[in-house]
Amino acid sequence: MLSAIVGRKITVVRLRDKSAYVGEVITAKSPVFQIDFSGGTDLHPDDELECGVGDGMNYVKITATVVTVNHNSADLWVTAQSLVPGMERAPRVIAPGVIADVSNGESSATVSVCDVSESGLLISSHTAFAVGSQVEVKMDFNGASLKLVAKVVRTNQAVKKEACELGLQILDADRLSRARWNHLVASLLRRYGLSRAA
Image 1 (cartoon, rainbow, N blue to C red):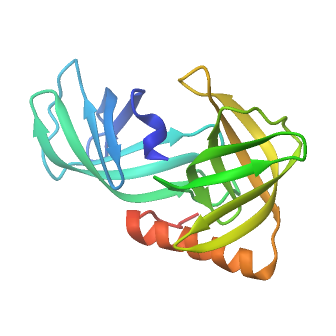
Image 2 (spheres, one colour):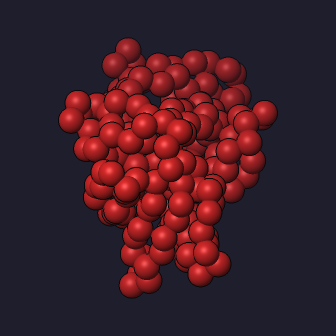
């Protein structure tokens, strides 16, 4: 989720006095992200902040603690993430370096996996697949292969015009593939420290 907001402006609110600050996300490598506040800031280390970010599929509320402040920028440590109340999608975790093969019988593509959850995944693809269509997803993780049947539920044009982001909802998987998928998600959650809180 955090990687999807690099280069975007977000508003963070300091919890103790509700002061709001607008800045641009410079870098994001969970659980730390850096924000540049071009208008200046009076944030201090240990200030607790809250903000909301979206990736086109989910809207997540983030609580973070200021780690360091350098002139007009601040490094923030994510302490909690939760879906906004009323949304039923599972929390997602970034999946750097994970690739998959996606096909629908007519077209196929090797894609980058942006993030994953127990119920789906967000991919970046140079091949478009129609919303509502079913696709087969194949990938290897830690030497084990898995295969999923998924439905394209959302598509967004990525920053690079030649690629698009596709949100896939998992519809079916055999027991072994489902177990391997859940292991992949759990492993990434442990590695990047994201919360399952709903």
